[in-house]
Amino acid sequence: MFAHCLRFLLLPVLASLLLGACSEPPAPVSFVNRVWSVSESPTVSKGMLYVFLSDGTLVLASSGNKPAFGQWQQDGTDLVMIEEGQRHKTEVLMATKDILQLRQHNPGEPVEMTLVPAE
Image 1 (cartoon, rainbow, N blue to C red):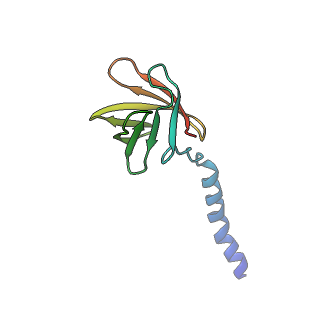
Image 2 (tube, rainbow, N blue to C red):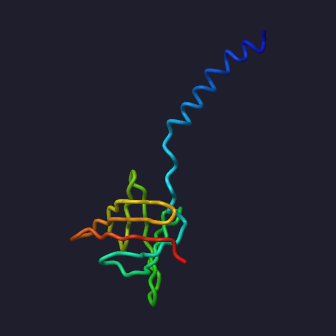
């Protein structure tokens, strides 16, 4: 009898957990704490490095120059990148483990870039 009562209580709980797990979207691929290199962009130098640190620090580096530091913030599914005190709304067009595509809204035309993990 105890087993029947226990089953009566556990079945709704288990069903709820299983249905909840099935309805949640998959976790997004994280671009945070990884070094990314620009592979394609009409305006950003190929090979420029971007690092989005988990504390909100943005590190930018390119060959022959000192690294620059800014900040970044999550804004829904997009980002805000803060460079030299300027806030730039940045759309995340694609984020996989191998590709990060961004469209940054600077003064003038938006800047698009494709980044890949740095080697």
